[in-house]
Length: 170
Ligand SMILES: [Cu+2]
Image 1: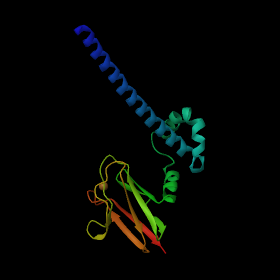
Image 2 (image 1 turned 180 degrees about the horizontal axis):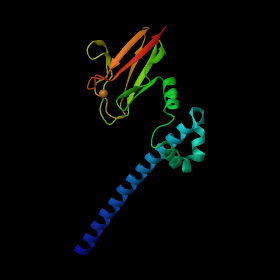
Image 3 (image 1 turned 180 degrees about the vertical axis):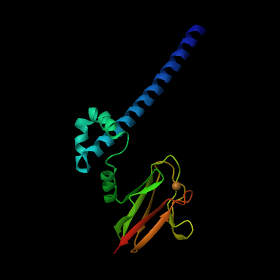
Image 4 (image 1 turned 30 degrees about the horizontal axis):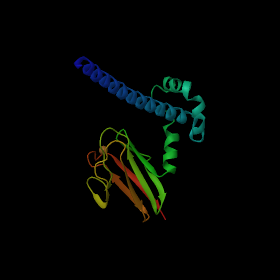
């Protein structure tokens, strides 16, 4: 009787372990696929996002071997980002910077660094009382709508050397 119970428990634990392992494997796989896709998409260029589906499989490793792990077409990616009025925070830098927009446009900052950053108006020495994102952890974002034309400097509070500029045209 107790032997059966022990067996059942072992079986349940085994099933749970397998389930967790499967979820992890699928998650990591999806992540890897995403990275491969992005890498390949960048290789092809902005209008070539569609191409990555057919070539993703073998283009991935080739792209990384060629580029030495560097994002060789980051410029292309940034162009897309600019069109979408998004500023990416990566490697302790705001990108693109500066960014020019029409008044009434909403800018979204997204932090891709593991380190937390902030998006605060003005400079560290001379803060402006316009916006303050609070701490943005990895993958967290913050948005602000610029309604008045002008040149807006902003910075990261924990890293005052991180500065960016938004140019708002009428
Ligand atoms: Cu920072």
